[in-house]
Length: 155
Image (cartoon, rainbow, N blue to C red; front, top):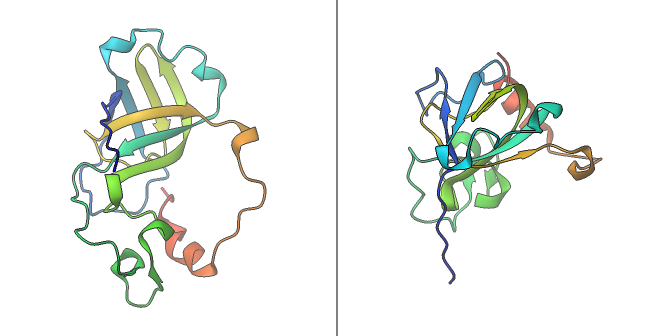
């Protein structure tokens, strides 16, 4: 199996510290501070976009030891069992998270976003502008997802 190494491009700074507190991310304001090696112009042009996709590492939680057995979503026995790639849980292979966030400001090596579901100190591995052409047109999901996630991005 091929392996690879990722080096963070920046770090999340916000008021959230508890990785177990998994709801109410909608009003969370985070500043991603990019490494000096990218220079003060690394975000130039990003201010014209309303949203970015932030790829980050769930570095505070270990991977599961075995992914072969489906698990109840969010550990809730009243929800369906899901295979590892049918959910967005942080304890996953490679522990990579991705979230689309609203851009609030761009200043030098600092990008401030709203709605990033990552705690302070989280390593960021990439940021990409959201472009309509990359968004799917018809997204569908089971009703239980909407019910369970109704509080996730609420302020």
